[in-house]
Image (cartoon, rainbow, N blue to C red; front, top):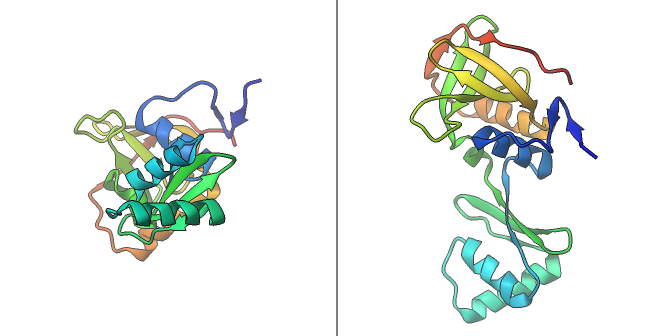
Length: 189
């Protein structure tokens, strides 16, 4: 059975960074990254060692693994990583700090016609802005930086949208680009 989520068929993959953002948003949120799963304690320890932001010796790794098994998470409180957590029976996720959510966004675009913001990013890895998050509509989509055309593909989960809007309000980010953005289509919620 195909599952529709706010205008996007998640069984049909959206490629590149737009697809990653949408998938993460509707999984645990854009701050969360699934880093793997484990079947054995050794595999779990290996995941913890890989994602724990500081070097640890064998005794410390054993303590961290025991803490993880007991609490189902490790409160990391690192510079970028906040938490390592178990989800379900054996999946391991890493939660990043709020501000890391906009690290991939290379450009704050101010839409003069709608008086709102878009977070622009490279969708394909090329050195150009070809993807964006529209903070007014909560959508993620393609952005044509030559003609300032935005085409939404899917919706962010509400908590992610609230978090991104909070970051824009809390941090004094400078606007990289002002223009009147044309919308190609509207998504039906």
